[in-house]
Amino acid sequence: MIEPEVTVVVVPRERFSFTCESLESIYEHTSIPFKLVYVDGGSPSHIKSYLENQSQLRDFQLIRTNYFLSPNRARNIGLGQVKTKYVVFIDNDVVVSPGWLKAMVDCAEETQATIVTPLTGEGEPVHERVHCAGGEAHIVVKGEGTQAKRYIHAKLSYRGRKLKDVQSKLKRESTELAEFHCIMVRTAIFEQVGLLDEALMNTKEHVDFCMLVSNAGGSIYLEPTSVVTYVPGKLIDWSDFYFYILRWSDAWGTSSLNRLNDKWNLNDDEYGVGYFVWRRKMTIIKPFMHNLPYGRKNKLLRQFFVLIDIIFNRITTTQYALSQIFGIFFRQTRRYFNNA
Figure 1 (cartoon, rainbow, N blue to C red):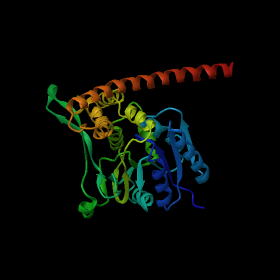
Figure 2: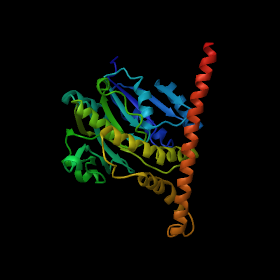
Figure 3: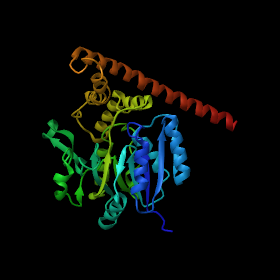
Figure 4: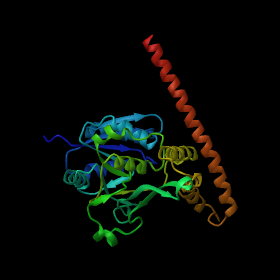
């Protein structure tokens, strides 16, 4: 039996309701041996049961917490179990296509790439519209001397274009950017750059990681024959709403941007809290209002729901923070008495 060279680590992105479709696609379309570690951060009971059954049926490692996880925290938990040459981080709302994993491994072996990004699509029908085909990620300095300001320049290649319109232009090539929707990494690089930065809780963690790898002398390649698609969708269960609100919360976003600015000595980022309000507005408020009589054109009602969202968002993040503090306290207390 061939020993797998790659471990696939699946983590929650922003909802749980696409878990089954994503996992099934991995097993259906992967032709080479692989190990799988599934990090389940607080999924609802029916998803929890599904994953427990699948882990026994398919013999993969399932790690569960009873609370939600930020993406980099979940990835680091999974990374701690990886013993293979390569690790693939993939979100739980991604569908893969036949040969996706072999194509990335072949690319890494033939180019000695540190990171390989597949051609990543977005939305349904799957594999038709480009989300990321590599891109640019580096520091830009504007001005001179004491007036100099440092910014991150990050740009996705061909985003929003139809795959059929750009496929002939795509080739295996060096790039600066890969996104964590799906990314393959040479595991040894973590000995140089350390674990993923858990202080980056919900934004630009992919930019940070790619720049760290590049600064350490690593290389990033696009492999366009590996095709995956991330599928943003409706929030079906209450757990989806709660997780999404926390995942794209103002508190997590502000903390992440402050960390990024401090880490890379940047001036203010080009977007602030408004970006996270916009994400929640487009995914939660707008669909809800479209189901109300005259909801589409009622600006006053829309402003009211935006205000409710901001208030509820603060309550949600405060509750989560308190639950983590009390959780740590109770775990430490239990450990103390168990050792007494």
